Every structure is written in structure tokens, then in C-alpha cells.
Amino acid sequence: MSILCLVDDKQIPLYRVMWVAATPHFCGEEDCVREGYYEIRLEQGESVWANQKERDDMIKMLEAWQGGEGLPEEEEDW
Ligand SMILES: [Zn+2]
Image (cartoon, rainbow, N blue to C red; front, top):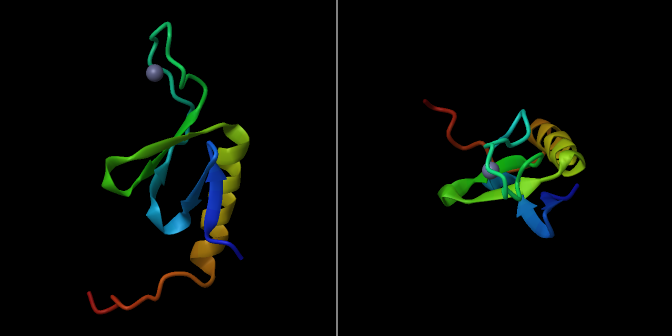
């Protein structure tokens, strides 16, 4: 399977995702262009903004990816 997930026209590698917002963004600002979008936080303090379908796809891919092949689990001795 792919380890890339398309969000906001960007191919995001799953291993760069720190967390995915459970609820859509709302900050109350009138001209906010992110309202209703879900924040996907990446390493290095970056974020991308997903619509609901993209967010759902991302979560599905993360769940499938973590259960299967992915990064090698080398740090098991903690
Ligand atoms: Zn906002």
C-alpha cells in the first residue's frame, strides 16, 4: 500500500503525521479560510488542512499502515 495520503493537493507521507484533528477547525474569525477543515499536524510544526473526506481517508490509511508494514520497529528496548 502507499504511505502517501493526498491532502490539500499535497502528498503527505504517513510517517510525518503527528496527529489528526477530531473536530473541524473553528476560531470565530470572520475571514477564516480554514473553518470546517480538519488540521493534520506534521513534524516540524507544519500543518495541512483536510476536508472531511481527506481527513477520513487519512485516518483509514494511518490505521491500516500502523497495523502493517511501515517503519522498522527498532526501538523496542525501552
Ligand atoms: Zn481559523
